[in-house]
Image (cartoon, rainbow, N blue to C red; front, side):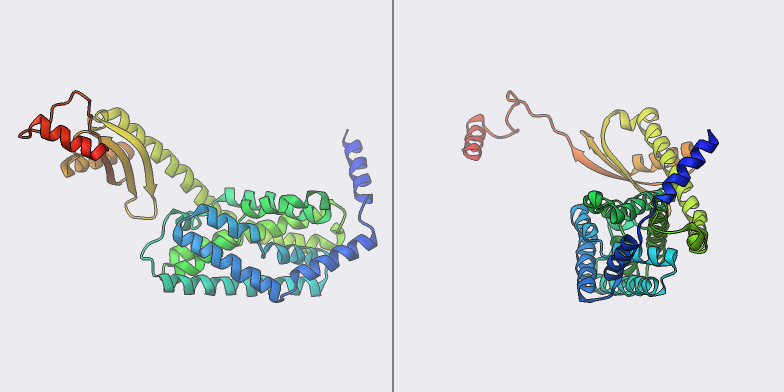
Length: 350
């Protein structure tokens, strides 16, 4: 069975691309990796859209910026140039990526200073805590992007891969973090950007190799370097992943403790619970419905109870929507005749 697999693999490798196909692919990638006015216009446009979307906390606007995805093009050129030892293509790809990245950071920084929003919302904060899951997404999406370049029939999937692995939003978050001197926010976004960049590059290399558009004998050194650089991200991404798992466990324990083991929540309707893990202690926003007001004393007691149950301090913040039951046969307000009350009601309805 093993020999059969080897024979099939050798047959697959012999079906490598023809010289004309390789030359055409290299020419296309060289054009995509060239730093020209069109590329810069796409960088400026996608960065502005992504930054405004992040400031407005609008996922739809951010997705629009992802679809443009100008940085995806030179990354594929960089990957192919490294595999083939094509210095010109590799250099052009590196230059386009560096210039595009620095330009986008500068634009986001300027817009952040200009708008002057004191604090950022969830769309910004979500791009400051990458995990191993983000690396997995980048590798899969990058592989599809590289394969789509050599298989034009599936080129329509490029928009989906651009949305799946976002390159521009993390760069914009770097600039927004720098505009507020928020170093932890900028560092987290930079880690996410490097994760996506290296994941896409590695996956594109593998796609070009397994489709016969590069030789492993020539490409092994570049591939090993890329693998080594990607492996260096495993420690911070692994820490982020285990932190994510721990946070999910704490949120579940917190919700169960509040709903099942407190008298207060027997009289409340919990609509939504959301935790901001970037504060110390984490802030838990509880959107509830209540007929009776919640007092600060109750909140203090609940915080102490939650800390005992979860061994973790939280700041509980209640967003209360009052519930009032009104029926058709309810009496009119005290001190007002039924005739006057009915007249006012009729005037409001008419």
